[in-house]
Amino acid sequence: ASPQELRKAGVATTMTAAELSAEEQHTLTVLSQVFSTFSVCGSALIIASYFLFPNLRKFSYKLVLWLSFSDLLNQAMSYFGNPSHRVIACDLQAFGMQFFSVASFLWTGAIAFVLRSTVISKRSDIESKYRAMHGCIWSAALFTAVLPSWKFGPTGAWCWISADNLTGKILRFVCYYFPLWVTIGYNSYAYISVIRFLRRVQMLANSIHSDDSREPRFEMKAISRLGWYPSILIATHVFGTVNRIQNWVAPESPIFFLFVMHTITSSSMGFLNCVAYGLNTSVRMAWCEKVPFLNRVFFPKAAAGANKFHKFENELGTSVPNSPALDSNESNKRESAMGTKSVAVVQMESIERNDSNNSI
Image: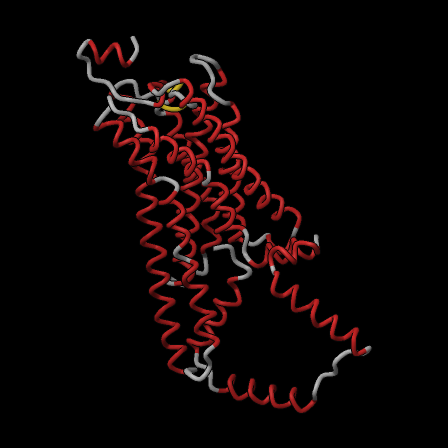
């Protein structure tokens, strides 16, 4: 019996996307495939960057590599479309979405753990935990995918854990939304701790070098960037969580807008993770060296400045020589500054220099 027939008979059930009209279901499927394409391309770019540029193969970028790998396969499941019930493609899509989606947000938790451990706890053995991270993440993802596998089925726009009864609804929250929001909570705690720590270091550095107005702005930009990481995970899942809660509270009243926002945000997770975690300065510079045209895309101001300088040189017919007096004065200033720098300032500058080399 359909969910509508069960409700007419007085049997409690839950609403899924299967109760939307055929046109609405098709719209959701198309939206999922379109936005998933951006995520697949973004994830593929990060994976390609790792293998093309040896200088990026550092511990931090390895974590981003596996995050992108999970995002790519998770979003690629949308290309199955909306398979029919009891078809291998339906079960494969449901398993793939559940397994790789859980793995994806668990890798963001691993990145947050590494960042907090290295910045605050000053752990030097964090790289030795790499294999343990793989074991924990893939095992947990496999468990959450196998446990509800008997409830896999069509849910309207795609196949996932069928919520045609209370058991399916509980499995959705236990196997997906509960570990998701635990991870979001930990990520928020880790990044807030790191941001507060770096602000204290920044205040100490500013109190020593209050005459240099450039450093605070540069440091503040790096610190503020950390807040984007947990925000992305929240933004890509808040509509999905609200939608599922609405399914439980008012199963007779589906809200198509919530389904649309749920589909768009969850399908964009791979793309947003690519922008936040993967496309740092080192990656952009590596691609610009390989494809010079990209300088105008990633570094438009620098490219414009270089063009004006070369034009100026051509008009003069000679290059502008360096001024020994200026070089000497600048060198003296730097030596004087370095002579008064404290450990806190050196630490802050080290974090700032490494920001372009790290993806977290």
